[in-house]
Every structure is written in structure tokens, then in C-alpha cells.
Image 1 (cartoon, helix red, strand yellow):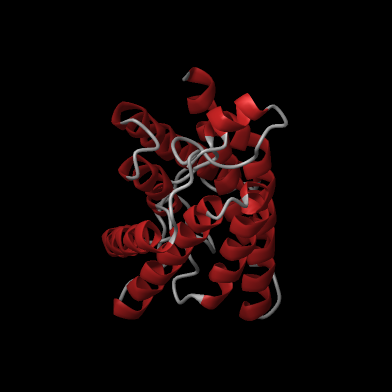
Image 2 (tube, rainbow, N blue to C red):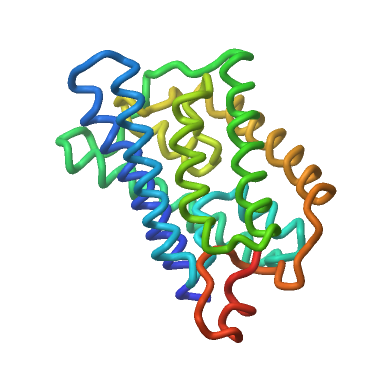
Length: 238
């Protein structure tokens, strides 16, 4: 359990370093669309690498939404799911603080970037629905080795095509309120984002349960299968 929790902490922390750090760098010059595209590519690439790295240990959730949907499907016991959520939140905050420090920003500064309104919240519904659908649909289809690239590609695309820039992650949302940079979110927008994420996650879980027949190995953790069939059965589960 300790290895799993450390993997979730480190993976979530490095994801936030990629999110905030790339946002600071890309915001330095160029048109807004180019900045957003560069940011999306960096985050998608980093997420792919992190899933490959930590997937065999913890399933590479890095996201309370993914953890809670997995628990809903019976793949993760409630106590472990709760611990995942806690370390994901702590890792996200640590990643933001580290990124702020690397670029000479205040370690913690409440964001002034307004992200609110029905259209933006709808963007979070769409982003989170798509993320849950892609993850669990890919795994239930038996394409375990495709999960890192599929999830990384989806997040990169969703950052660019959604009105909210695809946070799709409650831990990320809370942590990004602590950086007053390009990627921040003002505290007043947090509740709306998390509500949108919850709606998207529940809707996607219902669709996945109906659309994709469960696989025998569907249970605990996702992502990168092992060569040993026994290891595959233990750790490549959702």
C-alpha cells in the first residue's frame, strides 16, 4: 500500500509541475492559441510518461475522479480509494508549490484567473466525461498497452478543444488555485468546476457500465501490463 500511495503522490505532483511549469513558460510570448497548444502538448506528453512509469505500481490514477469511478465499479476498496484521494490532493499541491518555486513565483499565491460561468462548467462536464470514457473504455476493450498514449492524447486534445481547458480532476482544480499564473483558477471557480467534473464522471460511468462488457481482469488498477500473466492479473486492472 505504501508503494501505491507514494506512486500516486509522485505522479500527481509531477503532473502539476508539468501543468503549471509549461503554463508559465508558454505564457511568456506568442498568441494565446499558440500558448494553449504548446501547453496542451507538454501536459499530454508528461501524462503519458507518468502513466507508463507509475501504472504498474498504483494504476496511475492521479485523479480522484478516476479513483472514485474505479471504486464504484468495485475495482478498489473504499479505504484504499480514500487514501488515494488524499495523496493525490497532497501531491497536486506539492507539484504546484514546486513549479512556483522553480520559476521564482511565490510558493503559494491565490490565483486571480477567473474561470466561471455555465459555458466553462459545461466544458468541465465534457472534459471529464471524455476522460472517464477513454480510460475505462480502453481498458474494458482489452487495449491495456494503449492506455498511456490514449489518455495522454485525449488530455492534450481536450485542453485545446474545451472551454475550460480540461482540468477534469478535482485535485488539479484545488491545487491550481494556489498559483497566480497562466494555469491558475480563482478560488471562486473551484466549486463549479468540481460540480461539472462530478456530473461528467457519473454520466460517463453509467455509459461505460452499459456500453463496455466487463472483462474478467476488471478490478483494481489500470495501465501497463506485465509480461508475467500473474502480474498482469494482479496489476493491470481497472
